[in-house]
Image 1 (cartoon, one colour):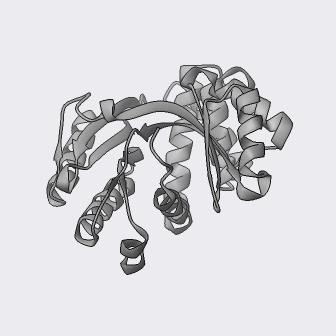
Image 2 (cartoon, rainbow, N blue to C red):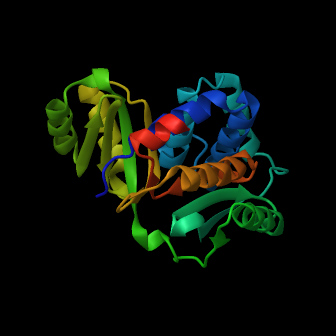
Length: 246
């Protein structure tokens, strides 16, 4: 597996803090509604809904907002959202995966294509870049949860495949189908995690220069600001000297 991208996680956390609170809640509420509509409206009986609710709680979404999103899934007039994945390339061939929930495929496809074009990239066909990523479960813990060795032992005992640690925290990786079980086992031994989710994990990371980083970050900003886009994943990393200039 690729080395853990410290830059990506710092940016991810900063993004959560900097984004408009209402926009973040809106995307999370959409995922909760879709998860509840596709399965049981009870998080204990629906692994995807359980993950969605946990993600919402991680950013302090009020319980009544979470409950409304679940109830909305059971209403006859709830929108029918479709899951769609776009794959493409940013400048210098950087691979990017965009996951969206939309009630209008034409609108979303047009918007995503325009963002890539504006930033010197282009959309590819399904499968054109996902072969460079692994679909895995990721469970995050703060650095205070324990040493790297302790985390590795706990993760392996819980059925995980790998752990990556740095000064910022620990990231436990496991097979997609084991995410719920591994997360529950870790919670018993280490306490509640910061986040549990399914991700696309780059098999290798490509370091970029300042100009490339600026163009790629603009593309990611445009994508993440779109209401239909849920996640954006890439395979680039920013060296410390370049990060300092940003």
